[in-house]
View 1 (cartoon, rainbow, N blue to C red):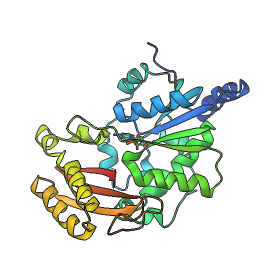
View 2 (view 1 turned 90 degrees about the vertical axis):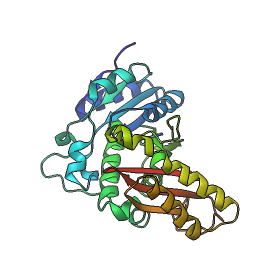
View 3 (view 1 turned 180 degrees about the vertical axis):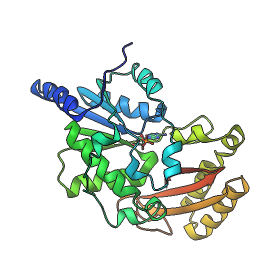
View 4 (view 1 turned 60 degrees about the vertical axis):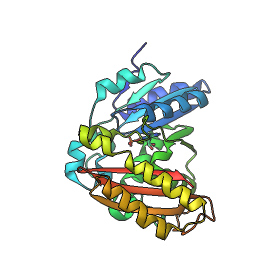
Length: 281
Ligand code: AMP
């Protein structure tokens, strides 16, 4: 078991990647914000299987937080994260400081329209600009051939795929399935912020999604089933349902029945923690 080397500057990262590329090796990148769990580790495994070299990036990206308190409270567990990655064939952990990514005078913004204006984008102004900007930088800094993202953040995955297509970035974006706790709750770094009492209530979110998906498959509409599902989520102890919507997978357009390949997506607040989840219908 060996803790992978931690790299903090883009110059050091470039030097390492250059040596790999000179040997003709392929590079996979797994962008994360740390507080690693089995969901993140499943992405690292997918990268190991597909690429000769694997870089896991850990960067709590200030630009994608629209709430300073959320940024401050976001769990940071770098030493533990590094230890977890020691069980994997990860060649480098890239942990840049904010100044390394956003030096003085930084004024470029990568912004997508359409896809970013709905769901999380409608409730977290600037969030996807922050994601798109940092992901573009991580792609150009790592020069990776493939990037691994979780379906847990389904909208983010679609945004990153679109960004790569629109900007002709020479990288393939690979989507990986959501990893769940035994009771169905999607793994998330934010689950660490839930009290024991709240944690017990949290699986109501996926249960409501699954019931609603079944109703849709049986011919129900999102409008009627959505109202019922929302009620169930609130009755279970959530304080607010930000959105609960059926959307087409490719362009995230709103659907009332799953005529196209569709996804049911939800964001809801439980004891001051914002949880998101989604499933295919
Ligand atoms: P984060 O650290 O939350 O920014 O997530 C980093 C990457 O891990 C993103 O591509 C997420 O979609 C992915 N991810 C987070 N949770 C899960 C999960 N439960 N299953 C699969 N992938 C996940």
